[in-house]
Length: 319
Ligand code: BDR
Ligand code: CA
Image 1 (cartoon, rainbow, N blue to C red):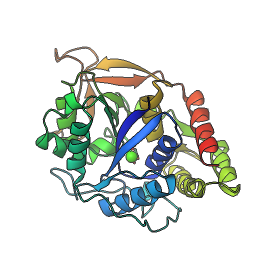
Image 2 (cartoon, protein in one colour; image 1 turned 120 degrees about the horizontal axis):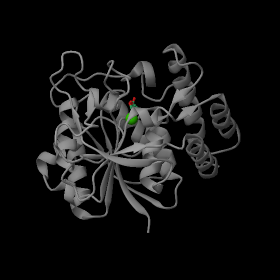
Image 3 (cartoon, rainbow, N blue to C red; image 1 turned 90 degrees about the vertical axis):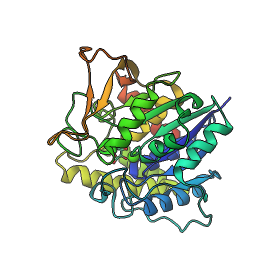
């Protein structure tokens, strides 16, 4: 039986790697995609998702999400992901229109249609899932499980000094999701920066993608190589060297296989009021709050094994 996913993402270079990975797996069914503004504005994210999904053969509903975060004006990371979100890649115009429903409504409809079956995968800000919870408060019990890329636990941020991008864009939404999903049948799995930054592409992985694109392969191979090359250029400009942190695919592959990392329970909350630390994810390691765990935190990442798995999956699926 394949695992059925609803993917909510802000595509985004590493989101594109994650979507491609899912499309390459025989044990995965993608039931829907929600385009959430984040790395680039929501319309650019939506266009990327429509074009990529079409090339990848994912004929599923793709719904455009909200224009901005619950409280704050939008912010974008086009320095990291390029003006259109996929670096140097040039995507064809999608021929299919998006689903007319809102992103939030798609979450609700798919969860109600397949109670207990749908795995939610949040690879961007939490805005649309938070809006979906307003429509259907039972979502945490309708989903099979929720997997999230977001946060930084006892680790510096990548957006503010202590905040990670997916949380920093919409801290209120992230807090609402973490609070509500703490009552799910199974705790959400949170892949935060201290886990996902262990997934480091080097020149070798970029060369493998370039090699795949140069072969007479799937058109998405060229898109990924051109996107990831931009990601390297950003990381070099940001002081990390000729490399790239590839966040979203680790959380995605763990959600599919249960492999490449372990998890441990932790109570996590989002700082909303801090003048210096707004958007920080705070983990209560010593149980000072006296609260039950709210997430299963990804830990003990087997990075070399995962990077090989990701590249092999893409090389096999995008031939
Ligand atoms: C997260 O932020 C985005 O830029 C990436 O796509 C990833 O989801 C990492 O902080
Ligand atoms: Ca993302």
